[in-house]
Length: 288
Image (tube, rainbow, N blue to C red; front, side, top):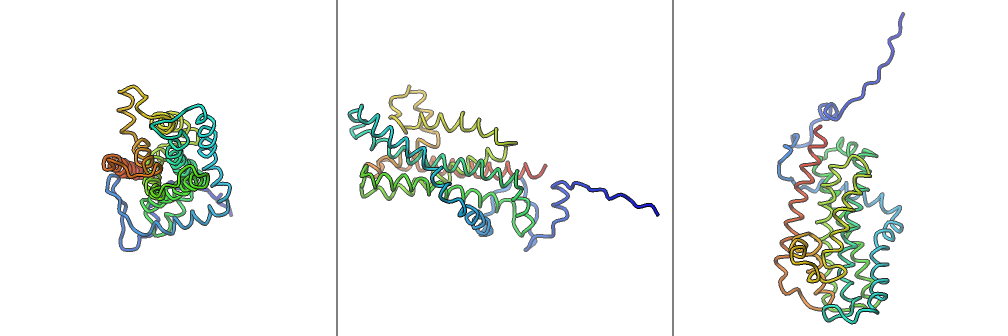
């Protein structure tokens, strides 16, 4: 009797979705442009990322804070010895707030890009998670909160260094952690937008070269934005890093921001718009 050869058929994502059992509570496939539906289902995904990260926690923390810390110490003490004062304060004190915000931006970007892309595309962890009673939105929101949490850790580390080196021990300094948290969530959401469009790790080079690096130099991290041409300073003020620096610097200097509403609203709008965009782009990616 002839034996029929076994044929291995590759099932695409649409087939997997059709074969997936119904979600608890009658949940159905969400419209691509629907508003996000927040639920606590993201918590187990967040916890899963935390447990995996714990194995490499020390190396991860060192990697995230090394560059901003080196810049703070080298530029603050080296270049600071050549500059008398910047905006009426020692240069290292001026640089401290910018370094904290830059560290937050870098940590959020790396986690939302390289780490999230590995779980989504390379390891296909997201596809495995969607076999559980989870929606794609739950996974994206978990990645957003997780990247924001890692960014807070990096920003907090710089804040501790600023206090330990006696660069600033202002009573308002601890309040900067709230600026760090909002900035971390903002750049995590922006990073997930880029992650949803990426086809490989090389794609992230464009983001860091064309977005992150220019942001660092025009947003008041190293020097006052007033030194920029008027047209460039006007653009820089509506970019996401400048409002974070504008909120954090007065807190490092020892007083509350004089006009906090505009930069605060700018960060909130960027965060909400970027998170919604990331969800839409990720849904479209998985709908193909």
